Image 1 (cartoon, rainbow, N blue to C red):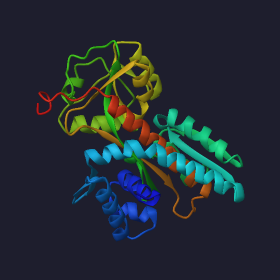
Image 2: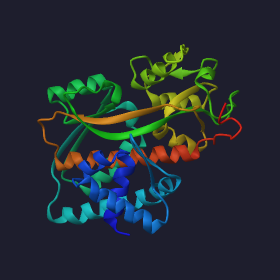
Image 3: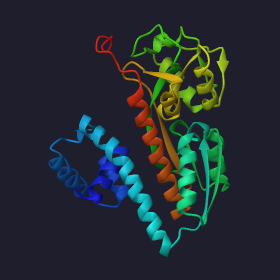
Length: 314
């Protein structure tokens, strides 16, 4: 097993597409496929199921990512720290983020990055996707992490995270519905959700509209961390991204439940102007943030109340 193979595996796991992963790694597709095949032979298990739309991790692939992603992150940080002793990364990173990405992942990324690259200035701000995109266009920001729903064709995009949306309630709250929770049952719950200009609400409303349904929450709050805190101390229920509820799950203040198939997800992208080359500092920072968000999302899904077999086909 080689570090290169694990790096290729991690990239393919995150991209879910051989073409995109090979482009990001700057290698040909056949080289990527060959190294993944060697890794699968060594493990004795297939790591991905191949489909016409891309690849999907198998159970063995999910397990491998959970085990190796933290090690790869540490090795990458160690490599950057050693390399930085001779050629330190300098400059600045001006990044905008939707508020739901400014959680533990951002704090952890900034702390690690500032320690590893002390000569880089970091300016991070948050806002709604549409506002951040306009700041990228005006040159006020180098890049921005936004919801996919708002992305325009004139911007270069980098995949950050495609994460599951989970029904969240306080640990003291018993839902009438059993896991998985159907979209229809949300209408009867005491919901607190972001407003209709929020990317997360747009995803939820679009899914409900496709089934001729709608929700009318009595409470609307655009700060998802405030929603999580309110749910933890009340009887309200919400729908939140997996990466945002990890801290509450570990603290025992939240319980989460999967949505019934096909479920819901939200996709985050990092956008920038195509004629503005990405600096080494920005590239390292964004890649580190993406890794931390992915790890939080995976941890939350593992801590979520499991789907019961008798409810799975209901």
